[in-house]
Amino acid sequence: MTAAAIPLAADDASAPVRRSRAERQAIVLDTAERLFATRSSRSVGMDELVRETGLGKMTVYRLFKSKDDLVGAYLTRKAATELSRIDAELERLEGDPRAALLSVVDIVERDVTRAGFRGCPFTNVSSEYDDPEHPARSAAADYKFELHARLERLADQVVPGTGEDLAAQIHLIIDGMHLSGGLLGPDGPAVHGRRLAERLIEAAVAAR
Image (cartoon, rainbow, N blue to C red; front, side):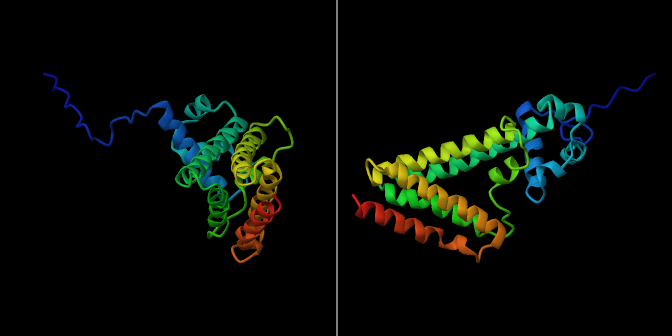
């Protein structure tokens, strides 16, 4: 007589793990973020990335048809995270555009002065690719555009009619903080970014 099969317990380690497409995408992008945090995206091969995900190669390529698409998706997700963080601060400070504008600089300062900061990921990764149509370049440009739109909206409230110039100046400070923080560390000129932003805002208000 054939013995009846013993059903596996619900938490049996040998039972296959079923993940949704979104969960699999998150695993791949989390892995990419971890690897890209300390190395250039070009130096990370797809074989290594697939191995680090613990997923099969076919699974990864069903989610991202190429390395270029994966890098673009990584920056797109990172942009959404960063903009959500900024938007939360802007919502908290709604009604005080000066404080909201400076809060964006504060967020950047916290980033550039943390241990292990290697520079703006959007600039770092997009600069690895020459093609202006590359997904990484497009994702980085979209992020910069969205950031600038927020700066300009706030600057227009601080100095109506001349906010465009103030927003551009604040944006340049932010880019400079990223560059300085990545190259010179937390004790470099990046720590003076907020003070410079305050002076620019004061000068713009006084010139009205």
